[in-house]
Image 1 (cartoon, rainbow, N blue to C red):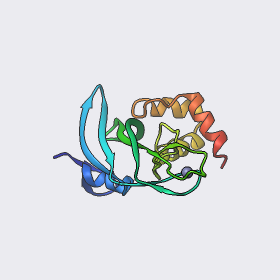
Image 2 (tube, helix red, strand yellow; image 1 turned 60 degrees about the vertical axis):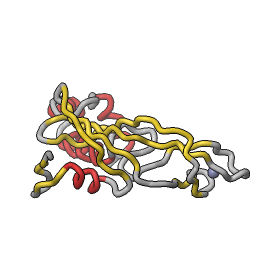
Image 3 (cartoon, rainbow, N blue to C red; image 1 turned 30 degrees about the vertical axis):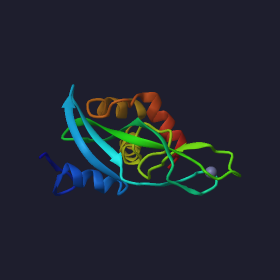
Image 4 (cartoon, rainbow, N blue to C red; image 1 turned 90 degrees about the vertical axis):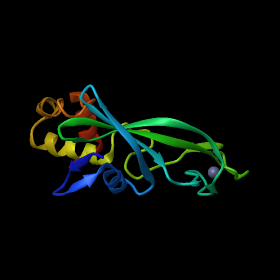
Amino acid sequence: MMLILYRKGWYRMEELIASLCSEIEYTGHEIGDGIIYIYARSNRSKAECPQCGCLSSSQQNHYTKRVRDLPIHGLKTEIVLDRVNYVCKNPECATKTFAESFSFFANSARRAHRLDSAVMKVALKTSSVAASDILKETTAGISKSTICTLIKKNPQ
Ligand SMILES: [Zn+2]
């Protein structure tokens, strides 16, 4: 069992994942090359079509979605999520298949919302160049241009 010190308390990895999103569950983790890979899967049996809002329990396939999250103990952290594609059964709907969505990242994003927020806090107090420098040890994929894009999308 791995215990993580996070926000003034000790947590088991299962609890850490549950705090991120109630609709996923921890299945394991490994550490390699300075990155903690946390494996998780959806615990839902149905998902809502983003187009028509109909619930579907018809699963087409599973695939791996990788989402960078806040670093843990100074290590880059990546959630390796087993994500499900569903079939929309509504004959009136133009969407045939869709990926289930989760509250902790935007559908096409590769970073968790909370990671983007943490990056923005640093970038707004320094500069995109300094923020990229400060964060590169613990936050993979955070280049100066990524930070500039984040600032443009979220003007404060
Ligand atoms: Zn639909």
